[in-house]
Amino acid sequence: MDISTSPLLVRRSVVGALARGIPLAGLLLVGSLACSSTSDGSSDGSGGSGGATSAGTQAGGGETSGGTGGAGVTGTSGSGGQPSTGASTTTTASSGGPATGSGGGPASSSSGGGGSPDPGFQPCPATGACKILPLGDSITFGLGFDGGYRVELFRLAVKDGHEITFTGTQQMNGPAMVEGVTFPRNHEGISGETIQQIANRVPTPALREMPHIVLLHAGTNDMYRDPNGADTRLGALLDELIAEAPDALIVVSSIIPFPGGANAVNTYNATIPGLVEARASAGAHVVYVDQFEGFPTSELGDGVHPNQAGYARMAGVWYEAISDYLR
Image (cartoon, rainbow, N blue to C red):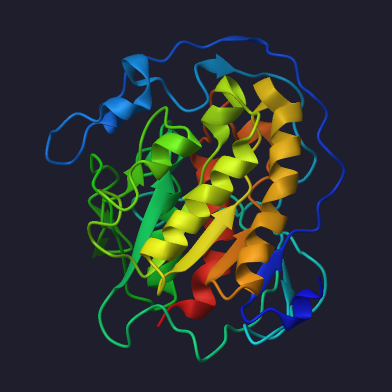
């Protein structure tokens, strides 16, 4: 299929050599999390027994990737926008350290190209905040760093003069202020959720407040529990999101490294660009970004969830994908 004829911008990763399987160095047991409750206090029982953390409770040791930059993305032209100039690029760690509630700079971020979106498609309103739904599991919740990638993503948007907010029904978390602006603490990240469990929350309650942009990082728990058919389940979730939120931009990412299931992650991640491309070529407002490439295991705080630097890295990749769409 010639993706240059796609009606929308499709961002495809240049997938590098597959990561080697990394043996587990130990087992980290993490207790039940409050993030499996909705913001109004009602319990969400779909997260598995005991509110298991994302990808179970295994912690992986192992070697650290040599790359320090965020994952690059490449743009392909079509009616969706202009092509990226050059290959994917990376940035090294900022001397200011990872993102903080007071607005410190990110440890690392993606700075790859991506081009401008089709002016005929603009998900964000001309006035008022662009509503962004962070959708996923405990990595979206921000286990290991309060607010997760949402903190640095918000800082980047505010710094560039964009007005955004986050939607979602789960327990609010994160700092009170970022860059001198009240931080929107909403999200739809549920600890322990598989792709199917996330899909069970679409459209209700996840789309209770209709977003303009959806950020989807899903599948880590499937790698731990049952990786077989994860790509089929992700495709069904995408179809549900497209049907229920046809005017939203849906940004789908590969999942970050999970050393305890490296082979399964590599297999699953390799299917995601094609799933996105097929739907974009059919007219859906969906783009792909690579959260895996260049993500070092040293930025996994417990072998599964990012530390503060890892979440800042994720924020940079998300922002690269959506910044052209923000007002």
